[in-house]
Length: 66
Image (cartoon, rainbow, N blue to C red):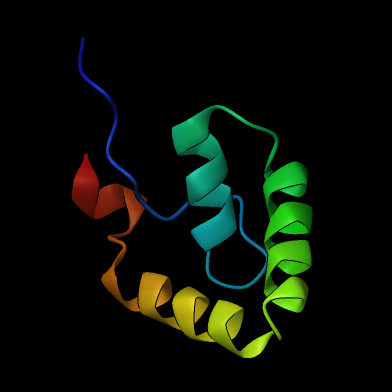
């Protein structure tokens, strides 16, 4: 059993980070986006923004990963 790699999704609103996480988990992208926003707000928003930027930089694009 091999788990797929975590990559940016083509189903994106900003950078494809939440869409990629949703594909990796097998969840609905809208649910992941809403949960990410709620988690970011509860953590005073700044850490969530920084994590998103870091993931945007380090997550490979879908074409490069396959």
